[in-house]
Image (cartoon, rainbow, N blue to C red; front, top):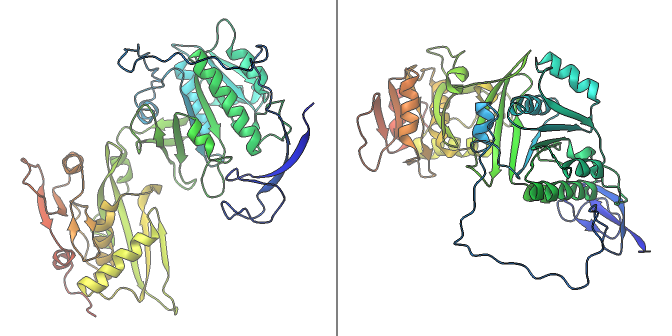
Length: 460
């Protein structure tokens, strides 16, 4: 019998320490080390085969020039979900979806399972809810008659046995991986060892049987999927379900996809009957927009291959504090500081002594640098009291010397703006002339070219 030893494992990064310490040396977090028992010998697997031979079998290598038959993707019928997955679910793939508690992960997967059950066998395994609770949620969503097989279990051995039957399910949904456990590991469910071991065993069987595996993962207070970081490396696709409970919009974002493009998003609206996909998110994000309001600019952005128009709002107010406040929602606060510094140093606009509040309407988070020019326009509009033209969209990246740099996929941005009725675009100077655009273009090469739109400004 193998001798058992004790080690301490960080529950955030998976680092191992021989003794307990208050602060993890790898990730720097406090009070994350948990005692776990480990055997000196290798752990036993869950397979029913006999003991492996001392000498391993040589691999049968094949030629890279060979042709492999590509299995068709399984379409759920939920366009936004299929879009983020890269055009459907690939058989034998493992998909990990994370999000805040109560954001709608289980609702989304139950709706997708009901849609997929019309064309294949779908099994929904819950470790957090009883079967009757899942049925109650399905009845509320109008999915009570869907042909989804339900089970409530946390034992990976039982789930693996169900996947290795003569007629295994084509798609298995695990809700959630933090509740699963492998009975040969002496650790509590949810620990790094159990999460890694459970995921590894489920993915191994899914690859062998050609079963698509959809795994729900909890997230930490920082928004990252809980458990070891290696969990995201083990799966084929990683999706994050984002949103603010104060808004009805939910964003499904792909951060990793071996079978499709990354940085794709799907937009959903949370209703009483469940999640409803939004085919034209730009129109929805601008639905409550009012004309001739100072401190607001419409940004023509890109999320993956999809153009998206959102409103950037800024408020510049005199500060009564020694240190002016900076509050940012939906954008990078460091990027805001850079844009303000360029306005002061390169354009002579005195803005640093004011309180500055920036918000991206609708609860969306913008990550691309092309929003720099829209933020600058919103700041200048709020500072001067002059509104950005209602029929104009703004986009462009700002450099530290004040130059406005070109951005990619310009034609798609302009096409989306024209489709929604915008007649003017303020954008960087293009390297070569484009075709016949349907809207008027105002090209600027330096941030100072933006100042005449807002009248007299306070100089340094």
